[in-house]
Amino acid sequence: MTKSTESDSPDLAISEGCRSACADYLKYLDTFLIPVQEELRTSSEVRTLKLHQVIGANLCAAHAVDYIIAIRKKIGLCTPRGPLVQSFDTEFAVTGARIQGGKMALVDAVNNAMKHIRIEPTRYQDLIQKYGQVSFECLVEDEGRILCLLDGFRFDYVRVVLLPVLQALCAWHFEDEEEVAEFARGGMEDIAHAAYSDLDDDDPIDALINACNPTCINCDEGEEDCQCAEYIFAGEAGEFEARFATSAELDTLLSEVSGAYRRDRLI
Image (cartoon, rainbow, N blue to C red; front, side):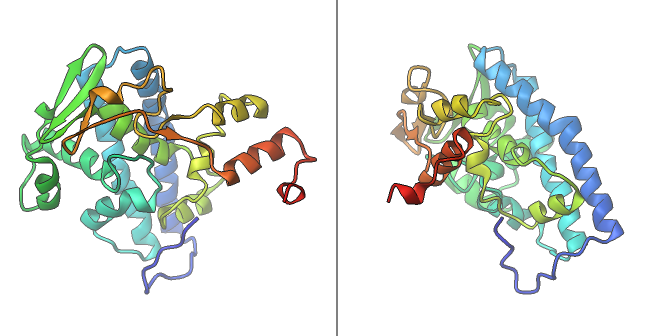
């Protein structure tokens, strides 16, 4: 995990207050984030998504930031909410190609727009400059999908934005509060491999097969199911953009398939 770059960051020490904040996050993760992610992915795959369902899931994802901030404050990292939201995709390894470095910002903006009808221009100046004004009306139901319609953008909001954010929050399996505190400091370098270590892939051979059959980096669907060619990103037509497993990920999976595998023997 990548350590915070803040110069005044103290050494990680779990105080009782920090432990309590981490326990709160674990409960939030188990009670809301993981069930919401699983339900959202299933509903997306079978095309039964409803707008109210996605708005509720979006709220859960947005409020995860507040739980992370509570932990960071106990550690001694007093980054305001705005800057943390802006850096969230980098800090917590949210994947994606066409919309990078801004998925959590969109999640936060949609949640704020739901509360205040429209987002405040001075608070979301950079985001409005990129996407135009954001309101909850930018999300519309379309045959079991939820499309996001913004200036120069038309895409599947759940698969392109919301699910990647939820996966970044849920993919790490914490053993204790100390690991939660380490996570809250920012960055998870193993997040990409976690995508190939899903609990559904108990058999490492199945996981390896999945890794060798790439999905789209934007919507996480296979080439036959990907609909990115229908979408618009910053005024340009989308397309299937394959995400192949990295050498490190394949090394890990091959090692799990056979303990005799060693990459240095192949060099």
